[in-house]
Image 1 (cartoon, rainbow, N blue to C red):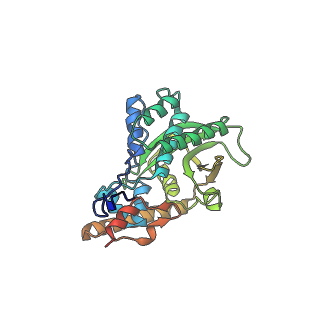
Image 2: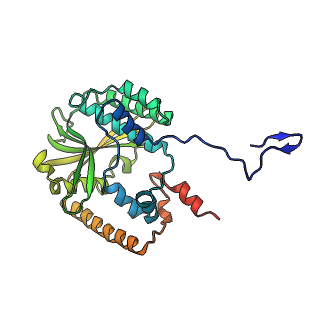
Image 3: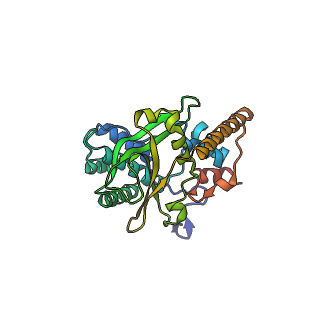
Amino acid sequence: LSVFLQGESLVSEQNFYVEFQAFEPMSDAIGAVCEQLDLPVVSGGSGKGWSMWSTLERCPRAFYNKYIAEIPRDDSSALGVGGLVHALLAFWYSDGERTPFDPVAFKTALLERNVNPESVYEAYRLFDAYCSYYEEDYLTPLATEYTAKDPKTGNSCRYDMIAELHDPLPVGLTPGIYIVEHKTTAKSFTWEVREGWDLDGEILGEIALWERAGLDKIFGKLQGLIVNVIGKQKQPEFHRAFVWPQEKAAQRHLAVLSHLEVLRKGYVKKGSWPMYFQGCITRYGKCDYYQHCLSENSD
C-alpha cells in the first residue's frame, strides 16, 4: 500500500507497518468465560501429556519455544475452533451433573471478548450439527475433561470423555467402558482420518495409562477407545473410529516416552535445542511456531 501526495510517498518501506488485530487465545477466553458464568473450567493443557512429548519428538526447538521460553504461538483459527468444540461438547455431555449450561449465554460472553469471531461461529456451527446428528446417542458420559497421572513417571492424560456404551448399539459393538476422544478436522475423510488411529501416540498413551493410574478401579475394565471425528466440511460429517487395547503397542509407547525423557534431559544439559525442519509443516498443517522460526532464520 502506498499513499502519494504531490508525487511523494507519505510512508516509506522502513517505517510503514500494518498492525493486524491480535485476538485473545481461545483457551484463555474459554477459561475466563467459565469463571464469569460460574462453570467448571474446561480449557487448558494436560500437563506432562502427549502434546508435550509429541512436540519434542517433532522438533526440539518448538518444544523449547513452547515449554521453556514460553513464546506465544502463532494465531491459529483451527486451534481455536477445535478447543471451543471440545469445551462445548464437555458441557453438552455433562449438563445436569454440573451447573446448567446455556450455550447461547456462553457464545454471547465469548463474543464480548477479543476472540476471533469466525472461530466462535465455526465452532458453534459444528457443535449444533453434532448435537442434531447424535441426538439419540448411545454414549452415557461418566466423566468429561478428566485428567489422570502415571504415579511412576508423572506423565499425564486429559481424557475428553469416559463413557459407558448402552443399547441399542451399532452392529459389532459390545457394551462397556470406553474412552472417547473428540477430533475436529478440515481434511476429507480419507483412511488416515477415519481409521488411522491405532498407532497414534495420544491414543496409545490414554490406553496405557488406564490401569497404571487406577482408572480401572474407578470406572471399570476398559473395553476400547472411540475417536469421535468431526469434519469441518460445508455439510459437517461425522465418524467414530474404534481402537481396541493392545498390550504390546501400549508398552512400546511407554518405552518411547522413556526415550524422549532421556533426550529432553540431554537437550537441557547441553543448553541446545536444534530445529527439525521436517516438523515445520506436517499433515496437521504448519507448526504453531512457523512464523516465529521463519523470522528467527531470516537474514
